[in-house]
Image 1 (cartoon, rainbow, N blue to C red):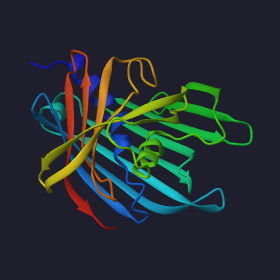
Image 2: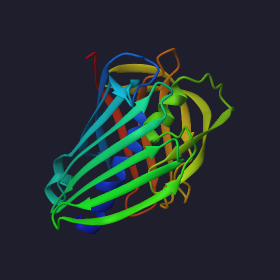
Image 3: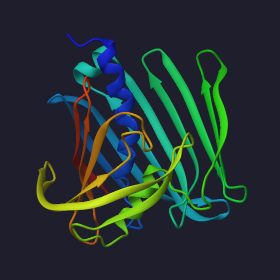
Image 4: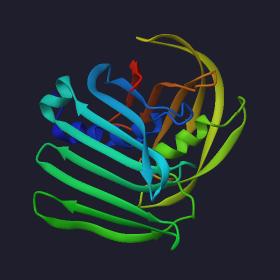
Length: 252
């Protein structure tokens, strides 16, 4: 039987890499629904949306992710999380908010990116205890991306297989220059059909942005849209492989 020791890391690690799936090249409102599988079972559902929103008085983007556990995972460790961020027209992040409800744990984490001072201001609150769990500042570049904006930026690029790029990324705890490689052309089949894709690897684990050992792959369609149709995390035990596959695309 799966205990909370194994379920809890899955719930929390599902969250951050999911942010890579937001559309950024479509330049129009869009919503994508994914089925999350872990150990070949249905572990959760994710819905990502992208819409126009003001950012610091200038046009920008609002991205949001709703993540809910399902099936056996939900039985042992129920998750209902929401992440949202505001990006400017260059996909540089200006603020982010994570509302995490996992079992009896409720946290709210807000990060404000101050471009003029070159700082990210991080504030995490424990809503159950009504207390501050963490508060600090770190140095960041003038234009830095959260993981949504970073992979959105990737969708605007024309990387051929064998090429790589580096993108400044911060989660408010750490600021890094993350490498992304375009690796192979592959055909991926999901419930939305058969897709010709390019597989990318984003080097965010192994003490880059996240401490945990692992690898993160994203499959983007090999066309102008670069639609993220599959995401896979290969993590060390006891978690293993987590896969997200596109189930539905909506125009909002």
